[in-house]
Length: 142
Image (cartoon, rainbow, N blue to C red):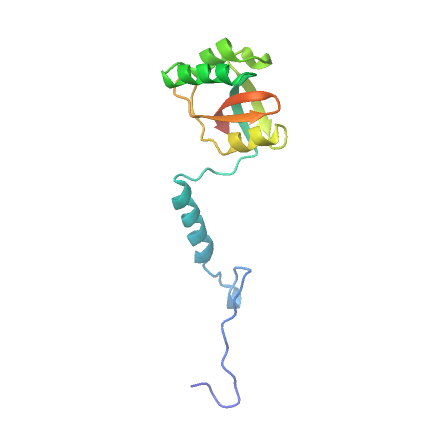
C-alpha cells in the first residue's frame, strides 16, 4: 500500500528503450518480431546495400528454358551464361557490384531476396523485365 498523500507510480509504455533511472528496458517485442520473421521465411538474410551478381539474359522464353535445363542438370552458371546470355555480360554473366537503385526494380527485388551462392552450385531465380528473361544468381552481399 502506498504512503498517504502519495500516488503509486505507474509503469509507462516507454518506446525509447530506456527505463527509469537510466536503466535499459529489454526490447523483447523487437526480438519476438525478428524471430517470427525468421521462422516464416526460413533463413533471414541480413540487409545489404550492394550485391555482386551474375545473370543470363534471354529475349525468348524458350532459350531461357534451355538455360534453366542446363543449370538443373548441374552445369556451372558462368558456362551457361557464356553460351546463352544475349547481352554484354557474356563473360560468365558477371554484373559486378551493384548498389540499391542501380538495377531494374523487378530484377533488384529478386536479386536482393536471393541467398549468395557459387557458380558451381548456384541458387538462382527467374524474373522477366522489359529487357527480357533473366536468370539471376548472387555471389556476395555487403
